[in-house]
Image (tube, rainbow, N blue to C red):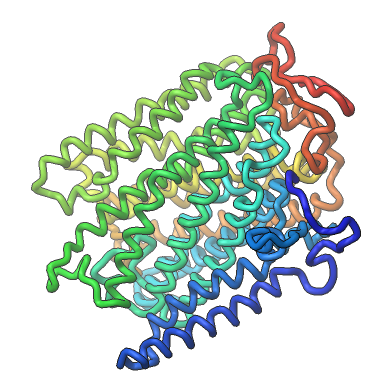
Length: 624
């Protein structure tokens, strides 16, 4: 952990005794909310308004609560005091306590992200089971249309946030500094701050259900979003908070990748996973402001009588969609690029071959990132039905398949005539290729204006979206977990349980979502709790397959819990990989390496006479 302390050497670390700092943060957050709420009511009374108006009180109270939360979890002692010239202390207790406070070690933060987002993923998956239970037959099954839409909306936003953040948050934080030979991230305090935005996000989304929830889906479209229940406000505040975390993290990732690479680590030697994290961060840094603007405008309309989107007052509802999708289509690649990078990172050690077309793969990542900025309106073909702009967006959308194809080319070329070692990480990496291929091919139909007019708002879109985000993004998350778990814990996940998890998840996923293309072609609308009776048999099959898919995660959770403490010791490099993270102990020491890394060769030079990728001088030394 690259941090210093100005406190005396014998000063105890904060949070080393008593309750973890997260509990203190929750208490301070409650006090902060009360202070903000009382201040808002007092000001409203002074200017002649009704003191108690729920939404203004919630907005101001939440801002105070968020600031108090940060201070309570340790930001004050480790950071804030320094602004006033007072001594700061580090938060570095041993054991499990270090995960429940403002810890600045990038490895701790990576594990915080991993565990937190796996828990959110499981919660969202449970909601999906309830949705499939409702759709198992026509008519009302377990809840009515309004409740279904609220559950669907909450499931959607949680899964989107998991897909956007899980791989980059967990493995970008833990692995990327190791891959480039850095001792930590460029801004350790900002790094800790980026994680501690997330518990308030989860609290807002879950708490929204106690004030009526919301039923706009994860997109929060106006005008419904401006007249919906108070849960809609909680959604907007949560999404903005998540966006702030993304921006803070993106600044850190870009700076770290650009400025903190080990000597000799030139751009043409940079591991492909780090390339994917770098451009994911660039996309987040450029586009996340758009979603914050759209949702802030919605809040202003709801709370302060604004007229951005109210047509009666001269507002333009379609403006929301333009701003929302200007962020949200690049966000698709924020979800997918880290998983594609992880897939390409895993293939070389499990085929014992160099990464095929390394420069073309990097070009594919850059090309996807650039073109993602000019395709947003393909989500709005039916809205802009008479606009010639649809033609331009159709061509840019289809053009993005070219850089995507370069990544497929690199993957298939690496597999060609390789000696495949079919361990669990490799199985998940292969699944990413298969699933994303289906997602890409079916997306071509939606990129074409005439086809999209017929398929939009049907289960074809549901299936395509899940093949892209779950089939690539979430399968990539599990590929990353099985691949880097030994580095993070020093132990291997159980291979038998891992393969059971994989095969049930892979078969269950495809049995669930492939039939949805047929349902969409036959007119089943998404975001609706009922459907035509002639589609019941296929929906029953899809629901049963979905329950089968859900079972797979029981094996994963059990495997992770047991292996964390009692798994087989992994050693420093169980996969025989060449990149720098495998040149240190598992788990790594506090400053990552016992010596100074220096890069001298290709990170993927398997089966060649090239020199080792790097050496570590001093300490125990070593090469990879």
